[in-house]
Structure formats: C-alpha cells, structure tokens
Image (cartoon, rainbow, N blue to C red):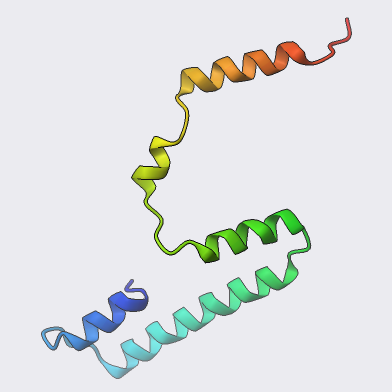
Length: 92
C-alpha cells in the first residue's frame, strides 16, 4: 500500500495508471488512519506518553542506524541489570 508522498509520486510520475476508485480508496484509508491516531492521542492521559509523542513530533529526521549506535550491547544490558538487581533490598 502506498503512503503519503509515495502516493503523490506514484500518481504524478505519469507512467503508472491508477483509477479514481483506487485513488479515493487510498485517500480514505489514509484519512481513517489519521482519525484513529487522533482518537488515540485524545484518549491519552499519561503526561509521560504525551511528552514522548511531542518529542517524536519534533523530530525532523530519524536515523535508525545512528540511534542504534547509541544503544547498548546485550552484554552491557546484562551487566547493568545484574548490578541493579544487586542493589535491591532482597528479603530472605
């Protein structure tokens, strides 16, 4: 399924033919997706979630590979988790 700018480029390049029915169907699907997202956002009451959405909205470019480089390895995760668990006040 074509999305957003892909749809515009597909229709405007002149090589591909798309019927009005198909175009309207795609537009309706996009409108439905937008409405579902709007309804979901309106239902959110958790400020932390709203802050995350705001941060996402402000991101102009998201480079997955660059963000992935900032992550930690599985071994580092295991090490940090083990260290954290050792700090908890366990009852015996």
